[in-house]
Length: 415
Image (cartoon, rainbow, N blue to C red):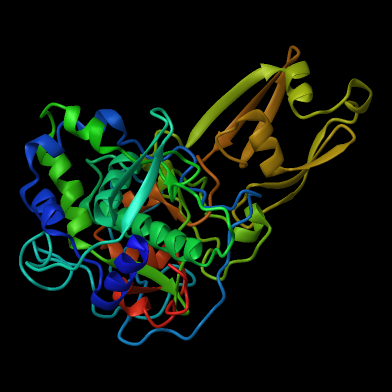
């Protein structure tokens, strides 16, 4: 009943911070931001994969676009390829850029997302929905307001010294993910009720719990305040496609291109399309990594018996994102994803060499490759793009709206 009431209020009044949360974000109270980075703050290793238990992303049915929303427009300023200095060209436009630039719904120059001054929202903010997070290390559930959860995710998924617009793009993606998950869970009419909504790890989104935040000492207050600002200035904003929250997949580092959703999850998603993201190579320390092992271990981990190991290794096809799609190893044909997961590789975009009974796999990029590249977002932000442009580039044809506008679409959901 508690959750039903909370969702009714948020859908009718929009997402806002409670009095407690407003103080939390506005004041950046020292006790709440104490050594946040030591608990996380790294770019996501595999990104939030956002999949169901069977590894296939859930695709929600399309509905009419909501009124009063702003379609994300892409004419992002592109960093110059092949140069360590990120510059922008105002007239540059990448293939498939979405629409034309419209009025941004993101706050700038200290304005909150609703256009009013201040970073923490309205004086009389409506109640937020509560998010129940399972903390794996502690084996307990922590319940926090939605915007507090988003703050913890941004702290856990992206370094605080990233550009503010990249942090804001991350905040919107994180908020979209949890709102979609809560809405989807609300449709569950089964008898089994989960005691939590999300976990605190990469199976959902990396989340820094309140206990760790409170225990930290003041060390990087100025940087950490930027995380709170990114959350506050995007308060209540989510990405939608044809009226519903999107599957806001993201990952650490592109190998040069992002992936089509169907090339990783076998399900086509219209807004998760392959786009060039070459700037990751200039910035990300995870762009190129090597994994070396004995050949016998290589075959054993892939489940290839000794009698089936003859015939060499051959890539049969690659994805739109240039990752391995299918590969023949000996007599066995595997997908690039299967190889990546069996060998715990950084990505499915790899080459190899064999020497003296050992194999060295050279991997490009880090993560599943679907959706927003976090290091790509950083590059675009450095080139002068705002969060709206960054999101428009990586999530094609999506719209940026307030959660309040989703009320009609989800009126029939059981909460």
